[in-house]
Amino acid sequence: MKHTIEKVKSPIKPGEYFLMGDEASADGAIAAGCNFFAGYPITPASEIMVRMVHRLRETDGSFIQMEDEIGSICAMIGASWAGSKAMTATSGPGLSLMMEGLGYAAITEAPIVIVDVQRAGPATGQATRPGSGDVFQVKYGSHGDYEIIALSPWSVQEVFDLTLEAFNLAEAYRVPVFVLADESVGHLRERVIVPEEVERWNRPFASGAPPFDTDDPNGIPSMPAFGQGEHLLVTGSTHDGKGYRKTQDAATHEKLVKRLVGKIRNAADEISRCETYQTDDADILIVAYGFSARASLDAISEFRSKGVKVGLFRPVTLWPFPEKGLLETARGVKHIVVPEMNYGQVSREVERILHREITALPQVDGEGMRPGTIVDGIEQLIGRAK
Image (cartoon, rainbow, N blue to C red; front, top):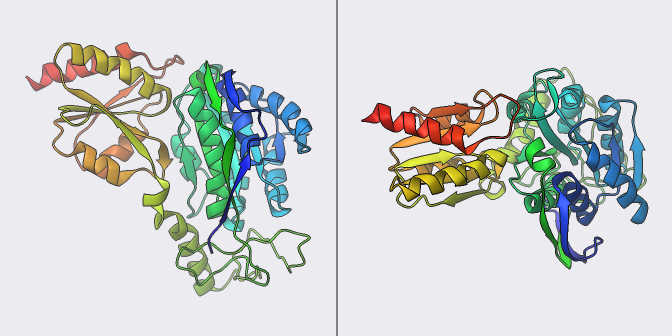
């Protein structure tokens, strides 16, 4: 089934603001129609929760601080099935606690939004320092086969925009959606423009339709809410289209998993987004996301001033990764460089897609990606190529 779309006046007063990234995420959620937030304080995401306390009071929404992140994601799933647009915000250790709940949200097709303001890990790591080490975890952290959507903002404006978009995608595809920010963007302050009108997508619903199966080739079933008079069974076990447990039925399980995966993979081209900068004549292509992409622009300017043709490919969606855009942009490029604030996660994905050697430039010192890291790496690459 298809979701419905409505345009509404922004509940946040339109105009220009000077906001922290975390604050912009909260405002983007309210603009999207978020009316339920369950969370637990954790740096560097706590400012989102604090702002949501006030915003939800202003918009008659519901806020609850849970005992931990396990409770937070479970509360969100329940709120989603009660008809709410639900969100939480966390960072590495809290995200790890949510993995079982993530699998439950995936198999019950509960549209929820998780804002992950990444920090340096593993474990407790550096609680207030930036990192980008959760890219694989959000996709592969829970067991079994399922798909999620993950968006990667590189500016405070985009934190606002992509949080709003995350709610729309969650509703449209009935899937958990992540906003994969990092501490550098989450605590950055920049100008944000709030529009007068926003577009909201709402989950598909048809009375009497099965909530866990559909004949529609897009694979997205109707989603009723408790209280609408539908007969609902919501289980984390293998189930048929009406929600009845069929844990020993091979055909039912295969059909369910194929649809859970297929509804995102088959729509990858319409979900995934990317941007390019000075790539038309590039000999060297930087593939970067989040704060690392900002540092890449500085590096590109330095190289271009010296006559070295360097360009940038920026995936806005990390999952599903914009494969077609990367393949097209990388055609004819001599070298591929991937700077990121981890020990090489997206670099592996780029290598898988392009089937060629790439140069990974990891920075894992708990600092924001520095242009110098990228400049030094590319200069060494140029030196080896001579």
